[in-house]
Image 1 (cartoon, one colour):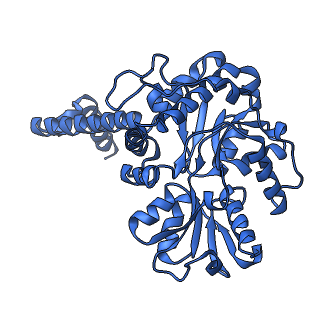
Image 2: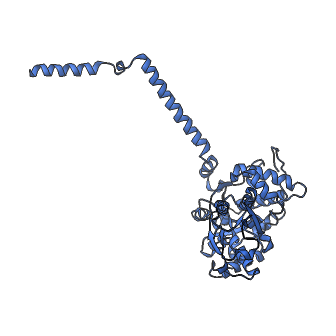
Image 3: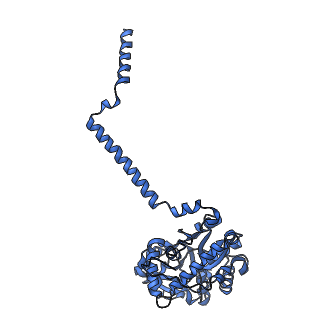
Length: 81
Length: 297
C-alpha cells in the first residue's frame, strides 16, 4: 500500500516537472492574455508619459541641476494682484 | 507678464515663476530657500524682516488694485453701514487690512466697529455670495469676480482712502542680493519693462487685453475675461508705474502696522528695502512686443 502511494507521488512529480506550463491554455487564450498584457503596458506607459508632461515642471528640475552660479531665480507668486 | 514676454527675447526666461495659493506657503518657501524671491503683501514682508528673516523688498508689483466689496442688493450702502458687520481680509499682515483701518478713521469709527476675519483670497467672493461675510477687502481679480458675477458692488477702491496705495511687493533673500546682484537686477529690469509695456500710452488697452489672455491661461489659471475686467474697467484700476519703492509709502505702512498692533516697533526703511535695483532699472524702456510676435526686445 505504501509503495503504491510513493509511486503515485513520483508520477505526479514527474508529470508536473516536464509538462510545459502553457499547456493549460489554448492558443486563443494565449493570444488574448498577450493582448491584455500589451494593453496594460501601453496604459502604464501612456499614464506615466502624461504625468511627466503635465505634472512635472521640467524647467524647475533642469534649473535645479545647474551649477549655483548659472541657476535662475525661483520666484513665487499667487493669483492675486 | 515678464516671464511670458521674456521667453520671446534673446535671453529667454529671466526667472522661474512658481504658483502658490497662499501667502503663508510663500513665506515658508522663502525661509527654506526653496524660493529665492517672491511677490507678497508689503506688511508681511516688513513683518518677516522685523522677525529677523533675511529678506528685502526690492521693487513693487503694482499700485492700487485693491477694493472693498459688498453685496449689490445688501444693506451696506456706505462705509458707515459696515458697523457691526463682518469683513474678510487676506491676512493680518496685509494692506487690505490697513485700508479698512484708514477708512474707519476717516469715517470716525474704531476697530471695534467691524469684525475682520482672515480668509484665503480665492474664497472671498463665494463667501460674500453665500452671505457668510458682509464685505471683503481684497486685491484683484476678486473684486472683479464679484462684480462680474453680478452679486458684488465695489464700495470703494483703495485709492479713495490711500493715494499711491501699494500692496504687492517683490521680496528677495538677502543671500541672493549679496551673491547674485546681477540676477536680481535682471529680474527687476524685466518687471520694470513689463510695467511700462502695460502702461504704454496708445497701446495700453491692447497690451492689457493680451496680458489678460496669457496670464489668465498660463499663469493664474483664471478666466481671461475676469482679468480683462480687472485690468480694463477702468484702465487705471491697477497701475504698473511707478514701481520704485518710496520711503514715504513704506513709512506710512510701518506706522499703520505699529498702530494696529501687528508690528512691535517701527523699523527703518533701509532695514527692509534695498533701492539700488529700482535705481538701476530707471532707464528701462517698455518691451517691444505685440500679440502674435515671435520676438521680443
